Length: 357
Length: 222
Image (tube, each protein chain N blue to C red):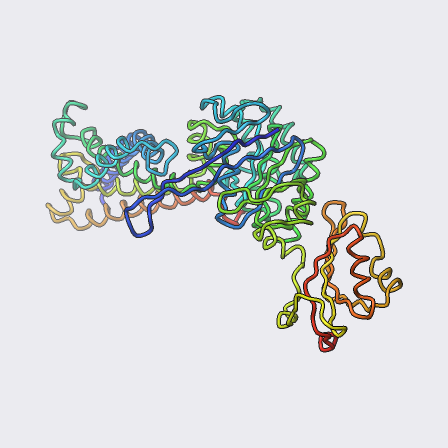
């Protein structure tokens, strides 16, 4: 269990262009409980304090106040030597890889083992083993400059895992990679998490990364955790606008731009008004043929205006924006409200045919 | 070229080589740790120590701002204390080293400060001690730049060693002045200049090769 208890980080910064100093609150009362063996994502826009937060876990940044525990060991109470020993059991990977340019792949992976004074033979065996695990066993004699970005990050991962850590910290590890490579690196992290039972804490600004591999997520905004929980929960019922904003790239839950000019009324108007609805569903509901039930059971027309269906880990989820028209639309709405899904009435609009052009 | 002249030149070359070799070795020996201390105690270093950095930096700046010819004369008592005499090649090695140590210090400092902070951070995250970082990260990563800087030092020492003739240091510069200039023997002047040019060419070439062999951060890998 990794526990952050009321962590604050305050920097003294000089005002731009002046000599006046002020305090910058990079982290504000951050408390997190991270379960062993899970993949925990921390997401936020740039400047939200993600980098500072992940560095407070292995104390590359020392919190101004608050405590950090890793498996009952209070990191913030350790002296220099003990802290170094504790860090050897925490791997870390970086956006810019941070490999040693003048060492071969082998030398880079061997680095943390040399720090622990392993014997030459032990190092050789371990490096070969771990290189095989991350799929760079044929690159050991090459230098980092000869590798692609994805290969470099695999070396970074191998280096971080060499010393058999309990915890892996990932600092925007896929942000410098193309989407294809990102996917393969994320898959590798997921594999490692499952095979080795390693806890992973990652920071990212991309919801895709969270969706792809995380079990739980915390949303960081201006140094504060504004939302926290299982990925499924945060994705399906985002509470804060920051979260919704971060999610727009993954879940297209907005009405398409061409609908922006529509005039909505808040009330059910005459028979000539249609209902615009947003349906959000996840889990078993996704398997039910709701739309065909609607059309069969009620005298309504259903027009799908926007839809997005996705999988968070193994759970299907999605959103649907539909236009309901016809005599029975009130009854249809009641039917939907009874179903196990989230129904949001966007508004009532005068019947528009030009939308369906 | 007469035989006498050839012997003279060989003797001069040997003296120059001795002065440059000895002062290079001494200045690397002291300049390297000086540069390491400068880079780690600097405001953005891994062991920031403002008073120490300020004091060393001031000392280095003073050392570097004194013209060599003046330094040579000014430290004669120190030279005499160390080698027992103030004339000859041994005596020339002292001011040459003293002037080159601060230079090497700065060269090493700037080479080490070029190392990406991210690499140092990665080493810290793996539990490296400051000593591990110096030995296994900073110096190996900066090696190509350090070699280039040392090449530069050797070449300027060749230039400075020519001035050491003024205190009877011997060497090629001394020959050029005494024979070529004072005795109006332009062929001696020309010959010494050619030898000096060849020496500089050789060290530059060798330095570039060594630096290139140590460098692995470019895509142009053999």
